[in-house]
Image (cartoon, rainbow, N blue to C red):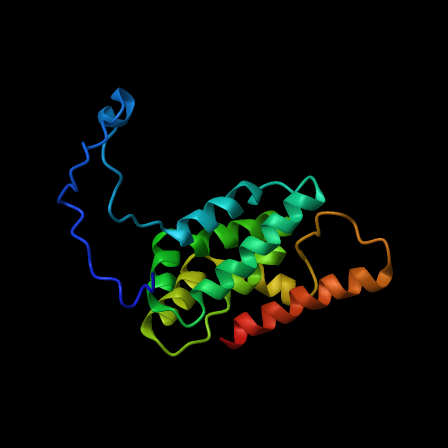
Length: 177
């Protein structure tokens, strides 16, 4: 049958067939929720949080951490509700702690401190970086000291230069914002 021309059928009426009985287990379960909300920002912060004091142990852990930081950066860019959720969940403080501990999460998370929009919430984020003593840890990075360590030591000078360059670039972007 063509779905466009099929008449609407009232499902409440029975067509002479007996209703199906529910199993005992099925009838004892609560009805499924009709709507649910998930706080994606909180979930991403929980993914990043275990690495605030320790380095990732495997390539998979490193990839998970880097992808969570990229996803979080995408979520809070130009989205006032997401940025508000990030600030309420103490995301700025988490990233500053990662930078302070000089772990891989500190290097990946620097892009989360780059507040570049004109909205008031992004200004509050920048103020939060200052009040959480973020500049105390960002200026030495800018000067080439206390740079967060990558999870595995780069084997080539080029890889090491790329890591340091990406960290310094993010630091300059934070200062500019």
